[in-house]
Length: 579
Image 1 (tube, one colour):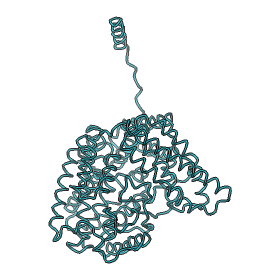
Image 2: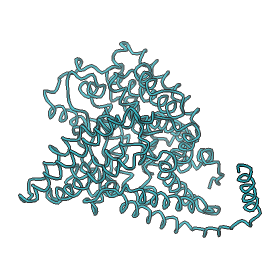
Image 3: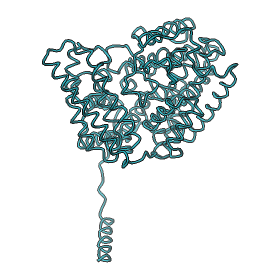
Image 4: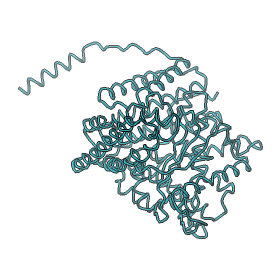
């Protein structure tokens, strides 16, 4: 019987081999105009298919809906991205103008970014954080700005809360292979979601009618119960869950080249991290008192008495930094720049964002304001970010606010080129903000050998440690525990911050390499730019020219600013004319 089956298989294989191949008709060539039309349609499609993400970016037409996580919709959306990616990849750009080729490269990398998770990581099946994040952002995106009357937003929140239990049921069906580490993080976030749904949400519920308020309260209770039940369900399944697994070097390198457009592979990036970690660790040692690099609230002139005083003290230092930038002519601040505020970090986001996070104006936002969310104030906290914020918030404020993320992303949001406006390249975004920390120190904002200057060195030191953890975790060379230890020993972080950093690295491959890698690329470009300009060089002009282009890969910016395509050629393996 076995022999007969083998013979039949051979006959079938032979017949298949002999059969004429079906030819796929060649794809219709696209023009630069059609490329931009395809991109515009894609961004409109994203707003429709991912309403929570659209709300977060300031588009509020579907604030009453959640994303659809059904397998059929997930498969359909993945197929749509892949089909479009194949078409864009097949474009013959020979003879196109330089700017059109750049837009083609950028849009292609955006599609690669959206295709990669479904092709490699399968987050719907493996990562419960996807669903907890959807629930958190569904409400958070309605609260953070007063884009509409409170009642309008509260009614939208009610609709989303009502949809959360069904989404969680779908999540439990989808999670065929949940990863233990991601599940542990999701459990912590799900059990911390109550203040967001209760206290924070109630700030916009004042104008609801009694019936509407009753509906909101009932929906909120059911949503909170669903999130807690989800945490319990995950906890029970932890022992049988899949251990966290690296994506492997080939996939990691694919991300570097095709999504980030980096002219580097994982070994290059890892080596950069080692070099920069050694450098900043040594620079700390050269301080008259190396402990100046470790923030200490006891050295502060005054310690805030409570949370509100802490946030106000933090925010008040921004004007001082703006005045310094203007006096030194270091960067031009556009007239449309909105307000930048410091707010308390919602507990639901703490497990993977122990230092807080920046929330810039969205791409579709009518309001130009932005926020930085800092962890809950505690003068006895061991958290690096809290201690740093009490002693001197300016290094982190410069990273998150002006001239960092808030300024750079505000400018990016005002680009007229739609493809470039939508390109949020994280290596440049984080690289620019980290570059700004050291630039401000070297331009004289902080006294030499002060604790503020020491903090800048420590911030670069632990960002350098991030590279080692990110690369070695995802290429399979280190365990999660080794990553935590490296953050503590190499990066000089406390255990709480180190565990959160390692969790963030494991959850978001390549995110942690962004800071030092981008900063190094910008500094290399700065040196070349200065040589090209000669006596006409001005540092402030370099900054203006750099961030005027949006959040683009430095390999692309080098082509734009120096007319040198060599870096993007190395990243892509393609050849482009210099002009």
